[in-house]
Image 1 (spheres, rainbow, N blue to C red):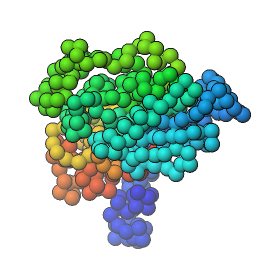
Image 2 (image 1 turned 135 degrees about the vertical axis):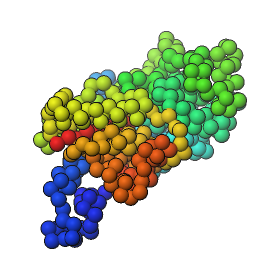
Image 3 (image 1 turned 180 degrees about the horizontal axis):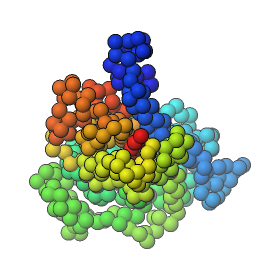
Image 4 (image 1 turned 90 degrees about the vertical axis):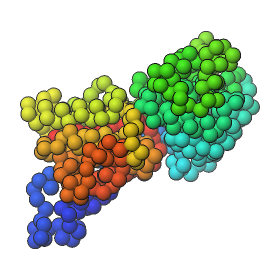
Length: 472
């Protein structure tokens, strides 16, 4: 949405009527609100720019003659008969493009799986588009091809593996005895359960032939160098894209514990439950663990994470004149509870100038979870914004932007949404009940009606979410 469209939304007039002589002239309060909303977007985009894969990969990778340097470690390309680029994730296209600009025709072949529409023209690396967040036939086909290619590597092959968030769904290759449909149903159950990503991916790894270190097993004895864009709290390598090239600390026993704790047994496909139970009983081999020789020639470099976006966004906010506070603890847990805390922060800023005085910008990053109760359309960031709108009702000059850095929030085309202290009032004038929309997990049509969806399109990066609170 352009700035002039934002102006028209708030003053309820066409752009040409937004002047002092119009029937509904722009008020001083609306001008402040428009400025704050534009500031919020500018701050978000500055954070996004800081995690552009091209910038991040070039920070860690360079080449001089036949010597490739990755994170201070050198590789003599003349010692290898082949250089491959493999990978999966929503940032895969831009990561692949960055590697192409460095290695150029040194790349023997490449294959990277990305989400539909998250593409970029490449010369040496092939992109395969697949389903996310629910895997589809293309996810299966692409993962099979990726694993087959991996199996062709030998000790004279250098494999550069590009991993980013979304790789778990995009790179789906069910274990023997489990169909794609059963894997799809399992993914839906896990996503709807409110389970955090580390629990979801623990189960995913034990239902796969490629995750949880199994890709590294296929590539062994080649040299494997992984460049990783982190989309998980703590930057745990075994969780990002379900850790296809790292030792797996989880077990089938952990999977059974998650199923019991989340009360998922009656919701999972019987074949999936049987597979997990057989694994826990020792009838199915475990995923590769720490100390396995297949990881001897494997290295990982995290090229960027949420903290990089957060600090860049904070710097932009300060440049715009805000007193800033970047919360060091990542936001996680139930979305509505996290959003309510943002409302409390806004009240503290207005009442006491704490924890930072106005004009204030409080930023945080992370990834909340939504336990679905309704069947509406939306994502965790849109739900965060909707719950925030209710929590800041009655305040003045407060704006909250919550958005995913990948440009998609749940199964929608929006990255998130923007809420402000007028959101609930404007919804009421349209006959919309925000509490009912929240109850039904139906934030997308709510913000669509208010023209407050935040739509960026595919960003070709992915480092979780950013939440911005502005108070003047």
